[in-house]
Image 1 (cartoon, rainbow, N blue to C red):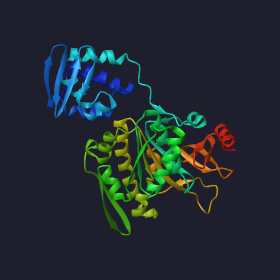
Image 2: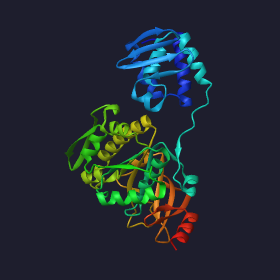
Image 3: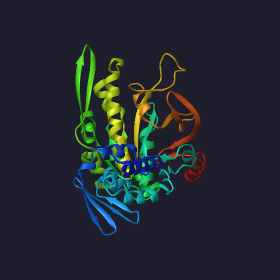
Image 4: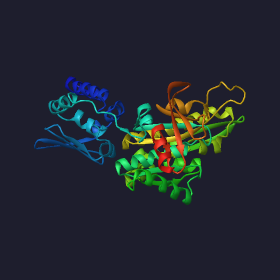
Amino acid sequence: MSMGNESSSVMAMLLLLSRKGITSYERLSGAISLIDKVKLRTQKDSIVSEVGEYIVRISSDGSYSCTCPDFTYRHKICKHIIATLLKADPATSTKLLESLIHQKPPVPKTYSSGIKELDELAPMPSGIIGIIGPSKVGKTMFVSQMLYKISADTKKPGLYVDTEGFYTTEAISRSESIFTKRFGQDARVEFIQLRTLESLMSFLGMSISLEVKEKKMEATVMFTSSVEETPALKMAQFLDISAMAIDSFTMPIKRVFGSGSQNLPARAALINGMFARLEEISTMLEIPIFITHHVGKSPINPYDPYKPYGGSSLMYNLKHILLILPGKDPDERRIVRYVWPYLSKEEISLYLVRDWGYVGKDELSRHKQEAG
């Protein structure tokens, strides 16, 4: 569809709003194919449109709304609003967009861990957060603690996807006892178990077809539904969650692919597809999604840095990564802001206290005094 000069001006303003974070380039791209589907109904002091099953309202005072999930949960200018602006009278659209351009850009939402040292090192953002480290270092306790803390602060539950079978009924009860005592009775986390790759992918609205050729696995990753129709998003919306965790991201993949390097391309295709879907969910709900991932160290070269299972595809998809390593003392854990493939210089020490969780040095001292 060709656009005149006035519509091109509206598009230029929308591009500027994308750079300011009020909408996005993906929404702009998606709106183009919807323009011809927009049914406009002008009302007094406002524009009302039908775009498929969704209703868009744009008022002359600069307010706007859409009934789609993207706007409902993110309050951003969605593709249906953009399509309406491009179809509507350019003068009306320009007036609205000019007022939005002069607004201050939104401040990215972050969440407190409740630990001063950790908040200074790496405030928890919305988006996907990788918690990586060797086996049994304390990744599960870390993400459990984060979910309970965010839940206590927001008064909304967290959602914990357990793929390893760690969270039995007894383990859930113990975790709840520890963190409600620490953070208060508002801290609440719902647990589900998805131990197979098939069940995890179905949860995300995906499927995978595997074929073995010359001892190598080839994977075709498919999206079986839109993000709005995934069980993951529907459950998250029903529970009105504040954060999600998948612990671990590694295990379901490892059960299918093993550790052979010949399967790296197939694993990479799967990981890239799953990350694309998780990004959609995180973006739509504006929540952090914590994923734990296994790493290993070369038994031959002790100076070789810790490397993630299955190659570097996962690390390339992550913007926020914390590496947990053992410290000098049994309870000490080194927390490193990790930039693949090298360790950054940003590092702190936290302490893992039994029946309490992770604490900083000052809180450790207070905890010991109270316990003593």
